[in-house]
Length: 391
Image 1 (tube, one colour):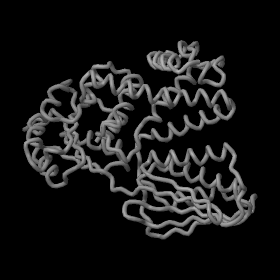
Image 2 (cartoon, one colour; image 1 turned 90 degrees about the horizontal axis):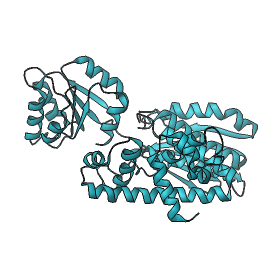
Image 3 (cartoon, rainbow, N blue to C red; image 1 turned 180 degrees about the horizontal axis):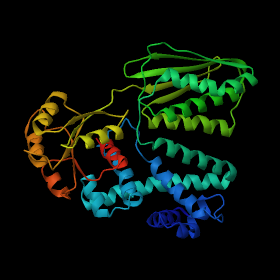
């Protein structure tokens, strides 16, 4: 299989991403799926392609407005969301010609990832299949709809309780000494648990008796969690153990944190967990039930403030300077278009992104008046979270 032919196969498979029967017969399935003859071979190739696209997503520390996001978004919107090329170009605010360049960058990067997978599968088919399942699980956890605010101490103690029996059988003591005033971190609880479970089971598998202690301290915008083992260490980790630690590192990156392993006088793993105040979202809608719905949608990930009148909305926008504003159009006294113009004409609020939310399908009008995005009601939690994530 030459690289050029492989690249054409990738593009053709993407064009039929949701045609599972087609994918099961596709030549790419025979190259990237451990057993393409299985009944769900097409579904497996579908997952492999989605997983590879998601692997191109820039880390959270890169602003969504950066050009580095364009190749990933070009592929995601075009193939995963099924948007037309012209719609993607409009969504990204670029010309059709620029979109084609960004799409090609994304295709080149995607082909590079899948080509590496093909070569690894040829050399180590069983390990690659196991790694594929791990990668799919990483993608699922990383795509959690809300980041959430998670208490560190309670989460750590829960993980220690889960692993206490395993640690005892291996004659390793497992304990935590955390300060009582440790702040919560802006991470999904399930993802943080999985990170800790992966790191601790990695240490338990590599350690020969001894003690594992977890300590922590607060830094400027993060909590540093230190997991330290003192004692004898097995000389070389297995491929499965390395995969386990790699998954933990990738998961923590999706949450805006970092992980470092230090192999000195035992083993030490340092986890930098992000601490951020939830971004403020001002919801302008004359229906209090919509405000309550958005508060439920965004609970934990955002601080939601509601305004039911135009006067209250403009006052709160100037006082709070929220990160994002959602704006209903059908408002009494002063409609949403007038409120939007007032927001964009005032020096204190003109730079705040406004997402117009309305049953009226007036996307073009909203964008022409300075709105950053438009959502058609009824609005689902996924729609709202995806729109807010762009800002």
